[in-house]
Amino acid sequence: MKKQKYLIKFLGIILVSGIVFTGGFFWGKVSVPFASPTPETQINEGAIKANFDIFWNVWRLIKEKYRDTDSLNSQDMVYGAVGGLVDSLKDPYSEFLPPAVSKRFMEDIKGSFEGIGAELGIKNNALIVIAPLEGTPAKKAGLRSGDEIVKIDDKSTVDMTLEEAVNLIRGAKNTKVKLTILRGDDAAQQEISITRSVIKLPVVSLSFQENNTIAYIQLFNFTENSADDFSKTAQEILNSSAKKIILDLRGNPGGYLESAVDIAGWFLNYGDKVVIEDKGKGQEKIYFAKGRAVFNKWPLVVLVNEGSASASEILAGALRDDLGIKIIGMTSFGKGSVQEMIDLSDGSSLKLTIANWLTPKGLSISKSGIKPDIEVTLSKEDIDENKDPQLIKAIEFLKNLN
Image (spheres, helix red, strand yellow):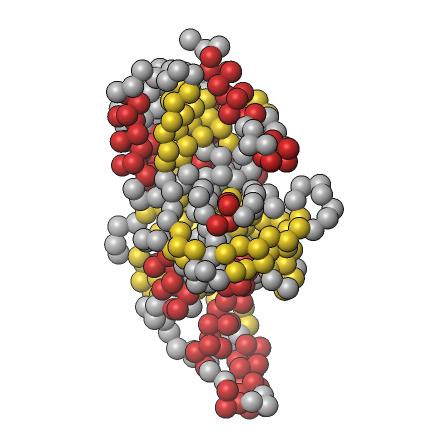
């Protein structure tokens, strides 16, 4: 088994192949043999009993009676059956990835990508935009966090799986996709045409506010390199005249847990809780800060919105629970489950929900998200006029802190 990593990522990143990421990966290179079908009629694992006669009867009937028997592919039938088995869990974050899909997934988390640059998820049985990534075609075309996608080109998304949606939206650069969306309480549908392009995941941006007294950090993603990039940003802040910090996690859909824990170490004391992994049945694993807490005493405020998810929620929750910092904006998405990535020996893989994330004080991120201490909405008029009342409120709040 190779070194395991936690990847807190949202379903439906529309990049090279659009393979679905999920919120909270336990990403381990666990190899499991892929067995050929055998005529077992019953499985008994402890209290779990299932009769497999129906499965094998249907298998034989298809082989014997299906009209186009020459077109049948036994391996595809097996993959379809395994996919159905995982789908029966009714968990949008657990899924079976056939070899080609699994291969694309592993390729997609490295380097640059082609697509529209947006994170998708399922919420209340609807296909939702979690966050358009900064500087991407999705962002430039006007796609927003919380938009419900009702059609992809001319195909309805009703009962569409995330994998199906991703396959329709993905594509080569310079090609177009048309998304029909519903936004907020607006009953009218809108059509947005987006030209796909090469996407490079943004990580962090630093600027200064109020005569360089406030460092404004925008953290767009938690990639493998985020901790290193944040370290460089931290050094820039320490070399500046800034004495206060705004940490903007709006539209940040997540990423590697290790990066979130490392970044938390710039603010939290060594040994402070960052997040609790709740496996159920009284089983927990706690992740602790291991940094130098350089900014532990600095006045700090965090911005979140509906597009803040997973690792973003973990970091925001830890800073509030451990330091009592204030959070400004809108309630975050609420994605805090953990998936284990298991590689099967034929190149396919299984993504399975195994736990939930809790904040240091035990708040379930999945159930409620991170609710802001100071709620500030961002209206359509604000966006159209390029106004940011949430950032303005954060600056005002910090100006009153010593």
